[in-house]
Length: 276
Length: 276
Image (cartoon, rainbow over all chains, first blue to last red; front, side, top):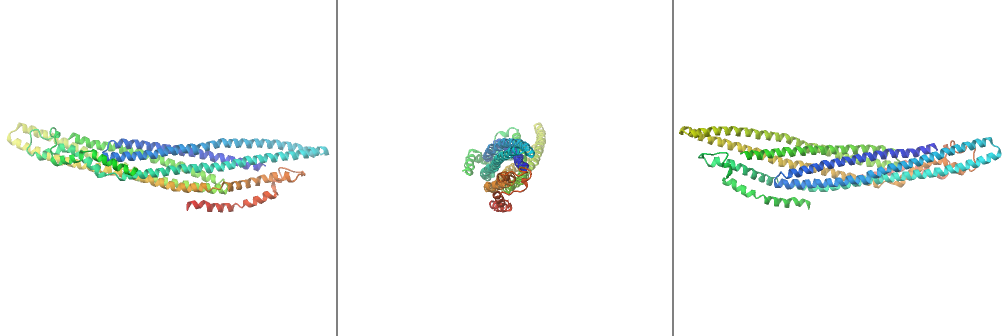
């Protein structure tokens, strides 16, 4: 009898202990995931800011990359929300369920205690044993036994239902956990594959040509003069000549590439292919 | 001249600013990932402890599930280490690289400043213009111009190399980031698929039978007697009868399932199939 109740209490205590730990660990896991998402979101913002300071080629690459990184964070956000509703909430509810079972066991122990007292009384009665009293006592003992058995069966049912629910919940909760994680990771693989293509198709040479054209625009003003005009003009070098750039070769290259719209259009075409 | 240096300085300052931010954000991202790993590791330990308190069926399921969860954390650990060596380290090194470029620009500015002074002096000389002096001055101006042009080309090279390296590094670092993340997520999908199979193949009924058998072992001692022995034995219910359980049916079932090794062996067979 005692060992029976002990086994039941252990089952419930054990469940309470571990489900409680699972709940707080998985809640912490979810919080850390949310923090990871926050950091990645910050990175997305910085990448976008940075993209705006770059030439068209890198600008498009960084923007598209940032967009993909943002997509992964959207999936991570969905992961966080699902973990909350399908894993943490059920584990929390389980706490209430355990309390209920614990109070049922307590009630049973109370009934059991009362019966023990009753039986002791009847036993004493029987030992005094005038035949009448013995009859009454024996009937009483029998009735008490039947009651005890009924209550035991009730408790057996309570604990059976409890255990069944516990095992079912465990399987369900961790299956849901695994499914949520699996879906997130699968989506992440998909999006990062696209991001990889974006970074791979970045055209460094085109970007550098853009940059050199811009820089030559600046250099041109400066170093065009001193080499052509070997006869020193009165107010030669720095201040004034900067305004007009007449060096033919430089000028040609500058025109060739300064039409910035072309590379942008090309880029858009390129940048979108991996996302199709 | 001024605008040229300004463009260069802006390029470097901009790179310094954003690479610095990328570095600290990605370092934070990596730290958060490590924290997530820590939480999951704790969960693995709790799952293993819990498994040891359960019946063979759930014990095997939880152990195998915990093992898979641990595998994901191993991959996460590899992710953390790779992010450190292939993303954060290069970004940190970039800081040193930027400092070097900055000092090269500073050196250039110094040389430029000296040359300006030199030219001003020569210009004054020329304005006084006795023919001899003018000759010397004009030659001096020409030489100074050639020098200035040489230095400009050097700086052009410095900034060109810097920009090229910057763009290359950006592409490389973020490609590495994406690859590391992609590999981790792909591995996680793989392992979670196995974990899902493990949880799916968990046999609740077998586990419950085990549990009921154990509980009946306990109940048996108690409720076997009062129903069979309707004639009350002198020292009936609780204390003594608990020692021997003679209820045939119960005993049979108990024997049928108490050979705990069988389900364990079955389980091991089952538990390993999804991992093959």
